[in-house]
Image (cartoon, rainbow, N blue to C red; front, side, top):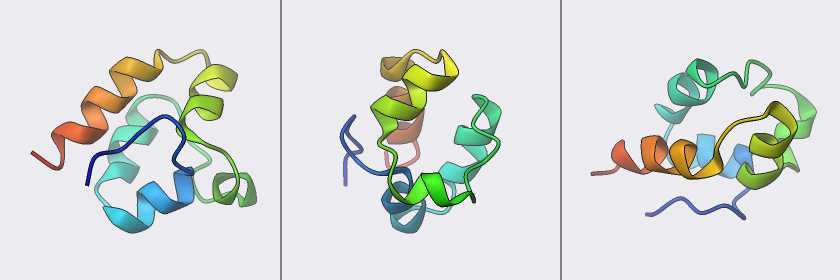
Length: 64
């Protein structure tokens, strides 16, 4: 499965629990908050000032 910008953070975490580590390392410390069940990767990256392409690269490397 390839992670994309429009995927919801909660779905990403369910698809591969190892993504929690990457998200936290990149500054998304509230991955367990209710917002993570509605917020997309793009939205989270924008709100937290993170380069979404770098985030996706790191997340998708877990599935390689």
